[in-house]
Length: 278
Image (cartoon, rainbow, N blue to C red; front, side):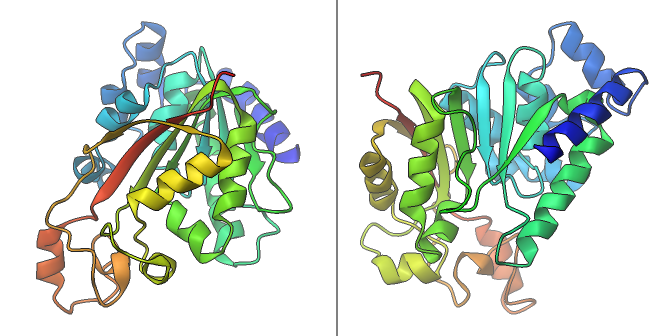
């Protein structure tokens, strides 16, 4: 693909110079590039590092079983908050696919998000290595990696968007196709109350844990385990502007902002699934 060629070319140029990530690159070569070091690295903005507290990236990725030798797909990485951690971690021994928005997507923010992500990668090629960007735009573009090639596919707070678009089954089918037998699907999503119906899930940004498990099972996945790493018991899940009422969005502006700030980011499920071996 054109985008992949562009990134690879930039990588060759970057390999001949000392980039902003030279310290991280040196640590990686010495075998000390841990998830903890990457989550708090100088290549990340202060704002992104501050969000480690509610998002627990190290604990989350360890729960999913991420290893540096894996072929990993990050699904719809947006601005690359998790990419900053995962891509350098697998850079030398594994492979990273970013299943991002399509330039042909119908919503105007999607191509812009893709272009911003591309710029992020090409700005520091020595940090991210050779990343393959694929476009994910069901039903037209669903080949996010060669079939049966990936060890792990990860999605963070995206399932509600697919439900709103009525395409959740198509997304999960794409993940199943890309993963090898035994491959892991990791899902983090805003968690609705157990009795929430489809109307809630189609409008609020919250999804029931039962429905995510149903989607995965319908696609063919086996449920492995759940973790409360990203739970927030203070989140009641019912707000005037849905999950976007809470930080970091604060969609209501200054209205009750202190209250929502005290609640913090949403209550989230963290679920691990596996593609059956047989």
